[in-house]
Length: 389
Image (cartoon, rainbow, N blue to C red; front, side, top):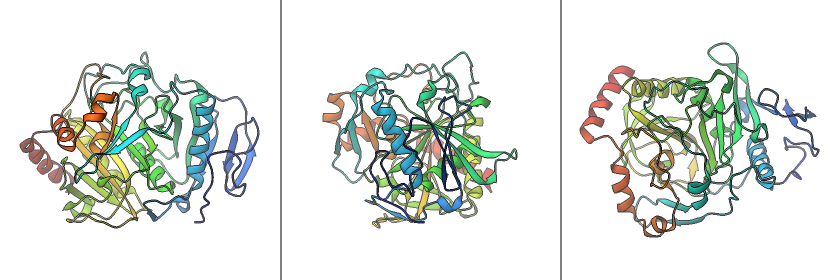
């Protein structure tokens, strides 16, 4: 498909922009932009439709092109930033790459530790949804960016695949949003096939190799027990995009990560994602049944192989799942929390001292405290392979 390299403002190429230049909301439908209602609610919002033809099949690191999805997300997010909907002003973050083979990306984001909403108390990976607690049906409707709707294929219940995209009011990075599948159904924070599918598809909709999607389970530092994934842009390569892996279950495209930290990797080049989606959910269902916390990270990546890949081409999507030790009780915001970003090699620090003194060895020592013991992980891997055969 044709891409255009555009700015973050609304004054973009009218042929490919999903916006109209007015105070109304917009609706993008089969290539036409039409006026939609100006009163925003969770049930009545902008619609972003797409098909498999909108997937970007191959991107390269450093690519500056923007897809229709990128334009919609980046422009809408920037508009909300300019109108003061975030809890703090997010400017360019101070960033450094820690010396060492892992190339950890450290960023200083002090305000996120100070201003973000108090996390909920989590007591189990299988904790039920509690309507009395904060959930994404209670947000300010202005925080809603749009609803994703796939025009091809249906969800397992026969309905179209739909997912709300809202801003994260305490952003980690530029474009930080939340993907909330079927918010009115009040799913707890347990992955579903729809959630995994939407996570992979949004990565494929972006022409930017720096757009990532992730998930924290309950006990894996999820802050809200209402099904959601995180999406954001990070303009730095991560080693996880090309790290070596060993094929352990060919029929499921399941690999074992050879680099630290130990985990599982699925790889797909699309467009048929059913095999990957079902395999990922089968794995996470096993973890939930065993009350094992986990984190998931989705990114563009190289085809897995036993040696580290140096190519800049990102022709597929990697889905990493890390089983880990559970952390129950209220989340400690002053700590160096190990969740989806940190396991992938992106380290958001909330205080200057930790940021300035961090080393690769020190980071790995902290991460290791949250991982399953080696013997427990090996036993789990054998069980997973047996269940997925």
